[in-house]
Length: 303
Length: 303
Image 1 (cartoon, rainbow over the protein chains, first blue to last red):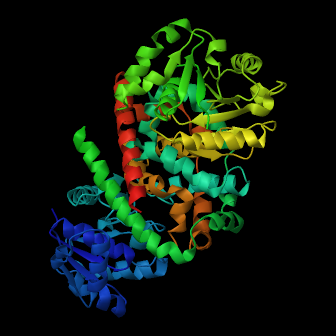
Image 2 (tube, chains in turn purple, orange; image 1 turned 45 degrees about the vertical axis):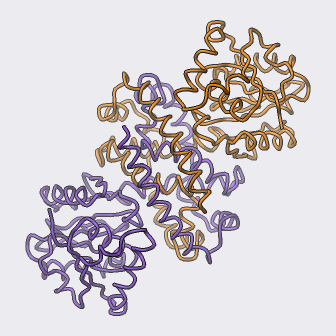
Image 3 (spheres, each protein chain N blue to C red; image 1 turned 120 degrees about the vertical axis):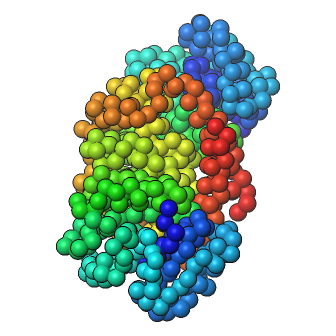
């Protein structure tokens, strides 16, 4: 198992990753390109820990450093959390590939760019992949691992093993695809949600209730495929035989990209908490996510 | 509040509804068109109660009767759970409308048919609606309330009030739409899920993990709109300004109805528990859903 990891970029995601690795017992070296962020990194990490109900003593394993080179010292794994802009990522990976030891794996938290867009042409492109977390990874465990065509299989194996070792749930993609898996699923659900609200079929609260007091609960326990595997007497193939044509018809009449309108957003915004509450509600959400994670772990132990 | 309800059709859904109403303190009159189902109704209700961790003493409020007329005696609300076949539903509603007292509300658990398909032309069409639960409603609280063009607004108001009174979460639709809200959302997510698995982008387990250890957790706490309202500093409109174009692009490239193939089902089936385990896993799922419901209620009380 890796013993030292580097966090490159210490915003929201970088801090959450720092907690993931530090609480798993790894040494973490943290650096941000912005000197002000680096200066306050230890204090903000402390706050993030406390808010998440994590013991801040795990931060004894964290060293905040002043330059990229020092951040890479002795590192087995780099988790990069820079801005999602292609020209910045290209420069960043050129630097990382030049400065990191040859065996160090370079993983990007990118949600929008695929690795081939910033790894192409680099000597170490075989050791570069995307490890896309859900925000924030210290309370939501899934991590999408997506190779470029150049990423070596043993790098993917090591990435998967490391993520399991630190308590995350790695999901391995076989090849690059726009949006990876998670945001593709989110996009289709959001398109239909926004469309139903914009059409006035259901209120924004009703739409959210349908998921959070309905489908979301099944999906949290089982995932969508395991869910329908139990919704017909002979499993998922039986389900598709019985209900596939209906579900196909509903899909064919569903909304597409043109549902992402400002008007739909404004209808939803009028029913949702205002932007002045985003920060406090995010903290509350993270506390609840941590409690949900503990609850789901206790359920698993029971079975 | 209603004091007596009738359960017409006592299969899986009818039994679950019986528990919902009986544990809320209502008198429940149960009848099934199949004499064998009626004969064993009390025993199967007992089993369903025990499996769900409900005190079987609530069944003291339940009376199983031998004919439809007796089931409707003194009833404020009829919850109908017959087969989803239009000719059966039409006959059933003609009978219910003829036999039930004029003020009794007639609600169908239908997931596939809309009320206008079986209420049209009936004298009491103003008192007929769909109250579509998620299976099984005694452990998943959401209920979609969908009027036909003839359903009276006060009937919808009473339906909403009753569902809240018995501890369910009613979601009111403004008008009929194919699949209502819940199955439209499920359909788009399933189409993209099956497509990603059939393309070999991700394994069935990986697909399920992405939701149940990722997005599903957020959606269980907040719903999809409240989720994105916290994913940009100034809320949902800000989110759509920043990420709308990306999400629109992902939606436009998403799978549609042709993703519901037997091949996709077979790939998933090979990775999922076999059909011999459907019954026992369903019972385990229901126990976990009941525990999750309690957990989520405890979270709400905290805040």
